[in-house]
Image 1: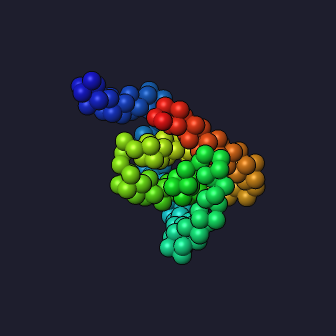
Image 2: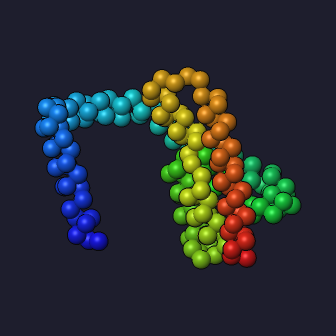
Length: 173
């Protein structure tokens, strides 16, 4: 397996260059042009990324997130949803980095083999950063109407959160 992993990328590059030569495509020029487009795309993403990061930092540092969790905690407990995991469930659709930070804090606090550590890890892998994707990627390519994508993404995140709780509870409790 180690030999395969060492030789896989060089063989893929050689294969791509071979196909480019056969089709008479100027591989280096196309590569450089793609690099230029990638750099322009990265620069156009920066304002969207910065705005999202500032909004998350304000949400967490202002205490608004903690206040919201305390407000909905009785309802969460009544339906069997651990209130400790609610910050992750709220932050995950917004930012992967912030969600990873919350997951790391939970694992450090409760331990990786605890119910909450396993639930946080499962939830981290079962949901996506819907608002981040819509804001950054859709904004970068100029898509203005994202209502349906937002609905589908948030529904998928909600299902991922609920199913994470159900499966981790079923397997580990």
